[in-house]
Length: 198
Image 1 (cartoon, rainbow, N blue to C red):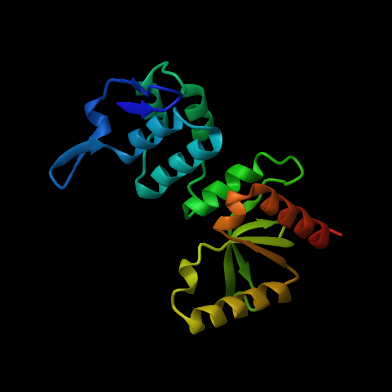
Image 2 (image 1 turned 45 degrees about the vertical axis):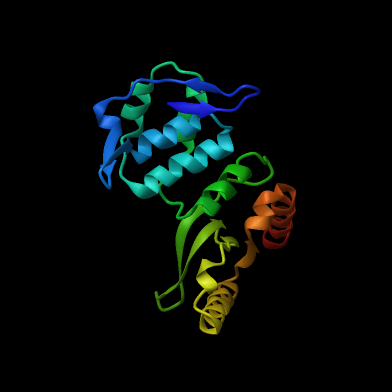
């Protein structure tokens, strides 16, 4: 059952569950991450739907198409199908998924490469980046977890960014606040493109 608020009062949409869509956690029966993600995807916009589906991809190795088929022709299924088509198993956080969903809305921002490994002249890995465009522009979502190691984490991240710049990459970073104000991210990426591809 999915509860949806689309006005007053709230409405409930009941969709039959297959045994394949149910698992047990701490003795309680719940829907699987895949089924839960697709139920969410049927009730929200494409950006949130993509976040939900990619979260499921990070949790398990689902057969999204089979689960979609079991959902039938319910309301919102077209959005769920689109999210499945666009989903990538390479995003590593909800922040990266949300970033991708926003980028897809902006025609001036080309589709980025995900989780690319940059090598130095000796073939050593310098960095694996969230997003990059032709090895010239690197985009990094900063969820701030990476800085919880204190000063050493900040130093390591600066050295990593310096190494990317030495390879000729222009680096742009953004945070949760930029995702909550998408036009800021859009301007940041457009400015980065202008610098990297001039």
